[in-house]
Amino acid sequence: MRYGVSIPNMAEPGRLVEVARAAEASGWDGFFLWDHIVVDPDAPPPICEPWTVLAAVAVVTSRLRIGTMVTPVARRRPWVLARQVTTVDHLSGGRAVLGVGLGVPPAAEYATFGEPADPRRHGQLLDEGLALIDALWSGEQVRWSGAHFEVQPVRFVPSPIQRPRVPVWSAAALPARAGIVRAARWDGVVPIFSDGAEFRPVTPAEVADVVRQVAEARPVDEGFEVVVWAVEPAPTLRRDYEHAGATWLIEGPAPGPDWLDDAMTIVATAPPSS
Image (cartoon, rainbow, N blue to C red; front, side):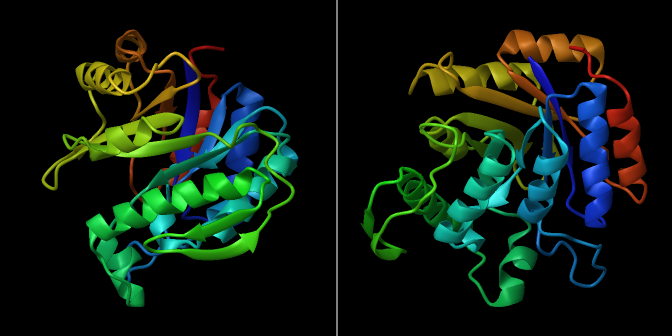
């Protein structure tokens, strides 16, 4: 199992780059940023664009896996996102990861700008957007006519360094199955429990169930990642996650006014695998 940190994109960009450098120096395997554009319109925290920050992280690190956890594809133009991720993949020497999801809270992230806040529509845009991004990453000429996107013949070069593509990890909000079904079509799953009334990390038993469901659609031992987020997990819980099938354990600071200081404290200590 590998270990990473997930950091809110709510700080001065240079501070986030500092956290990434400290994480690599301490032996962490991955550094991931949230991808929010608005959280609270009435009390806005400082927010920066994550892929721009990751480009900076790419040139000051040499080993970390870097990416988002997660980017709401539905509020981005797929062809622009394809270029952004490819750029970070080249700057990092092939270390980029594209984490994807629907985007929450929809009222802030979408309706604030006059966009529909319907999660079903966001799911449709996510699925078609990912398929289009994958096609553009191929380096072949792409003509696209879908339910939501139209693309005249175009060929994107360069392609990402990683082949057949930059790994795509898809969020899955349990107990619903839709996110698991989507993730099984790509390269990894990032499960979280979120039923509208409760939001929490998944349990080891839930991880094992996710692995079982993914295995019904595809092998989970061919580069497929099972990525679990937790806040300060105990050593026994880490082992339970690994036994359940987790391949990555992502730690991060609990929400609060001192989260950035807390993040630096986390990355200053070597992860358990080091």
